[in-house]
Length: 132
Image (tube, rainbow, N blue to C red):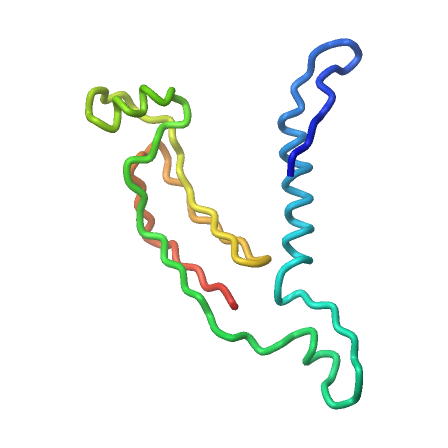
């Protein structure tokens, strides 16, 4: 979703990046909850199958997602070149990254805990089940 927001408010420059992100998140949430399976629009055409069975089909299975670790993540507060120097061991400054993983399958969204100040995070409790 690409939005363009007016950047002047009462003749002064204003930064509406936070508002743009909230609008995009809200629209994405509505679309993802309505435009994917198992959300269905059902029209009963006889008495053989009930409306509940049409709207809520039996799941095909469960997808188990286990998040273990990430390696050598870039630092979002540094330039591209600084991250390359860090990757090759030419710099040893502390990182500003606070990584987490967000997984979305259909309308279900799961998120791991945040590992503070790490470029090599490991998660011990990140197992998610998605009904598919």
